[in-house]
Amino acid sequence: MSIPEQTLHAIVSGFVQGVGYRAFAQKSALRLNLTGWVKNRPDGKVEIMATGPEDSLENYIAQLRKGPAFSHVEHVETEFSSNVQVFAGFDILK
Image 1 (cartoon, rainbow, N blue to C red):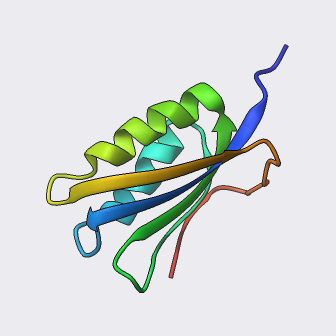
Image 2 (tube, rainbow, N blue to C red):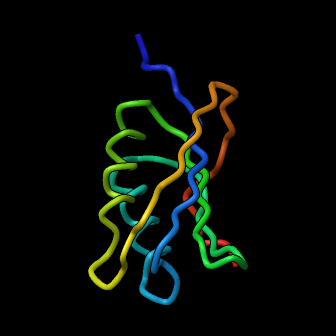
């Protein structure tokens, strides 16, 4: 029996642009076999969509809260959906 997948929508705020956060988010997602995308927002936050098993997504959120060395994550807003979005890989969007 396979674990049902979910889609996570996350908004990360703090000092998260210009510090390698998107690359960190991509590498963390790929390690957990998640698919989706990450992008910078005009408001200084980082937005993420990721699809995978719920336990992997929870682990991913823990990674997002830590961030890379030079970042300072203040808040990770999360929303789960069982309306799963399908992605081919995990991309960094412009």
